[in-house]
Image 1 (tube, rainbow, N blue to C red):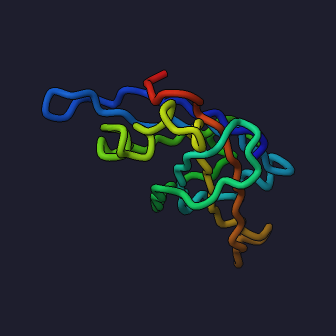
Image 2 (image 1 turned 45 degrees about the vertical axis):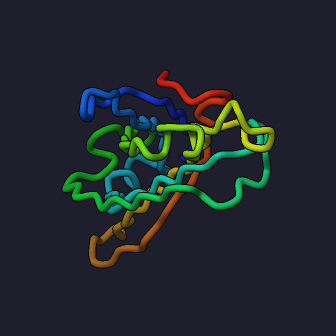
Length: 153
């Protein structure tokens, strides 16, 4: 995973109030097109953090972690070649941004935590050239979504 971009997007409404989520756009590369053809994603994990700032090195513990199994029947190479973008989304429950007492609602008011960041982990199976065995592989990348008060992009 070479790059990760993240943005807050409106995903609908719940009881007349906006419902937000995170859209992650990851630039994923394999060593070759042949390797990409043998790589099948199996799951991804999104961890949500409040951090001290854009350059924070210690992100601490996430306030929310979501694991999702993927049921892809095609390899990464069939959809994008050796390198390309893969998009993921995760709904953020309103209790995580709905008030100053919530992790994201406190952003902009806290002296210590000022930014919202996410970590994406993509897990896959890399099949051997003869397709008889496979090896589990994974890649992880972090990105700062926004700093200051929580708001949709």
